[in-house]
Image 1: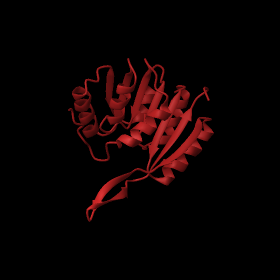
Image 2: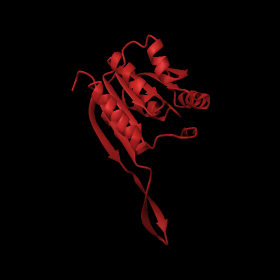
Image 3: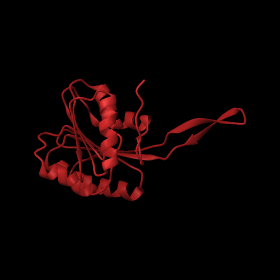
Length: 184
């Protein structure tokens, strides 16, 4: 079984990936952008869900880019571009073509990223955030750009042994903010 390599700040937990991807509206042949890709875990799971997906993963951290490339190779992710750099600049400067689905796991320059995605008419956008200030900023920006669809607060708890019995330990809560353009 192939194991995912890690980088600080990641990867996104499998349960959170499942909920996020259920909200993003993947379809066969879609162009999927993983912004702040970290380990590439979200892209890897997206590639398992649909056929003929085209992935563009980006991160400002070289360590994350190196890990994503290695993980993509291990998981046989072929139709992909892995780009190093600041995401809002990459998106604004490159001819990205259509963007069907965008997952945002990093929050640096999030307002600018959302503006560029709105300009490029990205169909479905999902943002994962852990800080309430980021959640408020993203919701407000999505409303300003007429993208906002919904927000979810997800808490996953894992069973852990305590004196021979089982208790649940909660993991960090995650906010999942969903935006859509023109197809609500």
